[in-house]
Image 1 (tube, rainbow, N blue to C red):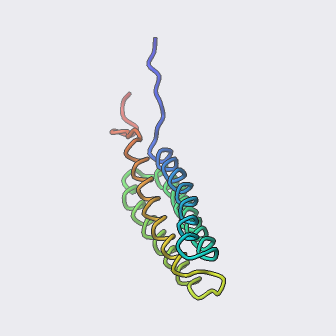
Image 2 (cartoon, rainbow, N blue to C red):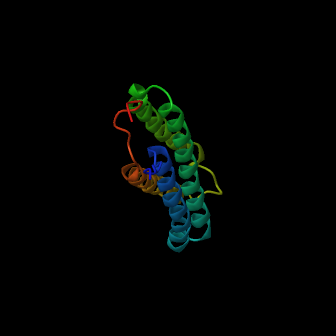
Length: 139
């Protein structure tokens, strides 16, 4: 009988964590926004949470590409992706802050809160994944 190997690579675990946290945040943020400041705030917080979720998911796609390359560049690439995600989030916040249809404070609060929740989900997914100690080494 041979042992079976499960493949729980880091990106798959991180993706699972981000999707679960993202769905939870996209459900909780509008409810909290609606209860706190009305319908417009509810829709604005949903937009903020969804924006953060999309940006983080695109970042994970970029991480998958980086991790398929040179193992030595993985940490530097991860830092560049994370900083890029934050820059894009700030740019989106600045671009939509003066829109009439948007409750700016709700959008910003939901975006920041969702980013923190998504990072927690990403870290939890990474921590639960299996990590190859010697990539390409003897089996």
